[in-house]
Image (tube, rainbow, N blue to C red):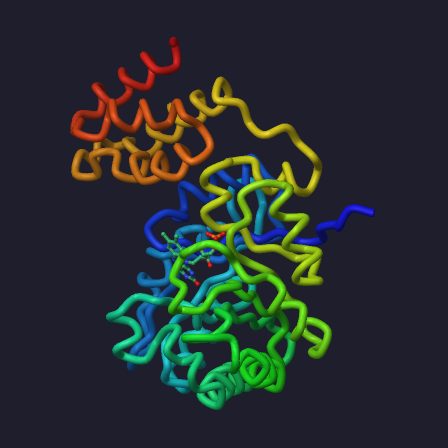
Length: 317
Ligand SMILES: Cc1cc2nc3c(=O)[nH]c(=O)nc-3n(C[C@H](O)[C@H](O)[C@H](O)COP(=O)(O)O)c2cc1C
């Protein structure tokens, strides 16, 4: 029998999976929920506008327009400030709180906020336990980790540290910080902790099509997936995996790209130069050769009408 998927979540992707992208992808797919880009917590209780900037949907019940719930993600290393900010995000409407222990960015790790904490499972426990005690037993608390910093030797300890802080869900990006984003993802490591710990686990990393999803589920022994770059490269990937939908043809995608760029360029924010569209096309060209031509056609353009005109030209060819 083929491996069956249960839940699929949209990965947090700083600078890419913003409100507009979340709106678009959740209108095309049946995601169980999305995690926002991270809010960086250092040594203060952040003002509400910081949370709203990352997650404007807070003003609408913290749901995308198509009704998919959003969970805010925090990144930081000070348990007390992480706890206070978690309480604030929940009070503002976030559907649970996610904590990022996988960020490989140098600046973040220098201040001990991201993947470097994977070397210190006890610290991870302190952060999560403090957050749990501040938000109470009923709120959903989740974490996102990599297999480890340089290797997977501490994975068991990390998952134990997370579980003993009464965390509900854990996403494991099946690579170390050292691996960066280099393929492959080592899904089989997830199976080792999945059997041992009673926590809902989501497998993440290198899922680009249905076949990858099935391999990931059977190797990780978890039916729950988080989709990152694959969800950008094939906009209906979650439904391809969940409901055997046909991968979206270019003829349909081009209309969506037009609508996306119109929304992005709304209000004539010319300083964007359609940067988000260009960013998205970098991922789309992994699945669609036509996206490469469109990317090349618009990459130097800075004028809204010229960009839309180029999209029309590509659409008509
Ligand atoms: C552009 C970009 C931004 C990311 N930003 C975040 C982030 O804010 N928080 C986080 O936990 N992970 C972040 N990630 C990691 C992804 O959530 C995911 O774990 C990673 O891309 C692996 O999954 P994939 O192979 O399906 O892309 C980011 C990844 C990318 C490519």
